[in-house]
Length: 193
Image (cartoon, rainbow, N blue to C red):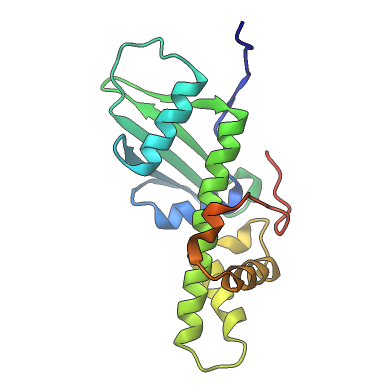
């Protein structure tokens, strides 16, 4: 007998929402006084689309016979209230959008995957910045520029945590070794939300 597992709304860690807002191709759908909302379409054939599809299929057998044409990632940034920074993932059919729920372990896995991309991007950005700079403190300045570019000062991150991630990242012989070892979020004290 299969044990029923509870489904939860997909959430994305706040720093990843800010990062994805800058890095995912999409349309800004609305701008309010302090809030921006962006819609990024994800095709079924993309890596992210295939991951979402696998997680969705593990979570629930689709009741609808409508063919899913892809997914949408809704990203919302609120500069006045960092707890209002959020994201949701919706499935798209020809007729409707509906919010997706995953098993808790798959929400964690999606966040861990996106966080690995974030960390690899950080290391590469700071390495490039430092290579092109002769000024003292170039690593700190590179981290600062990365944080500005991705609006990370409005999240739970701080420059010192990102500097630690950078130095841990460059200690490794291979850039993608992060994808080969168990995930540890102790550096940033991440918790599921």
